[in-house]
Length: 232
Ligand SMILES: [Zn+2]
Image 1: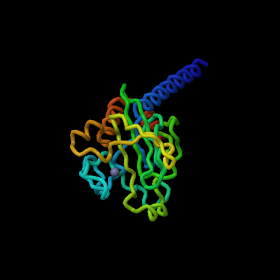
Image 2: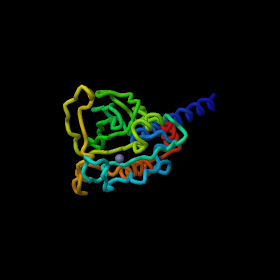
Image 3: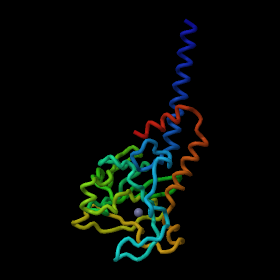
Image 4: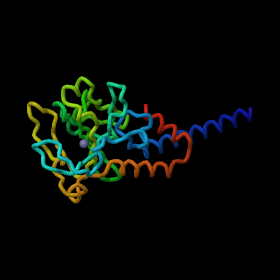
């Protein structure tokens, strides 16, 4: 009888420890890659396109002057899959959605360590969210363009353009063509590094800083299990 009680007590303590572990993992690992990959808490699973690095000088189209790349371009990471899901990188509120064609874009507002941050997802299709919706890092918000869409829009859009803004996005008046587009970013207008860094963070560095915090403070196996569960 006593042994049973003892075992039950141990079980309870174990359960409590696991719950605490899961809770802290959820709180600390809330930033995850916005991609459907095996481990969303590691950069090892993804690669950028050849010209996809942050702050790289770009001239994307004739009408746009040379600017520094304000985000990063994740290369299509599942070559054999036509439908590759895009997730919100962290909990937040969708504030702007543009669904018209190759520059389809989602902007999400986040609260991070007492400050506001915004994430931007561009060249996406099959958008599933609307402004005002609350999301978490587990919310599928869109997908990459399919092969058929890439043939239509051009293979140069065969990547996920992703930005992290530290300056508030610029308000826009929605139009008939883009009724849910309330904001735009500074993606095409940062010509110097100073201008860029006033408005943007380098995403890989940002993710690493968040994960480092998590890795340093993780205390149990259950925490990493909780993290791995969020990959699916
Ligand atoms: Zn880009």
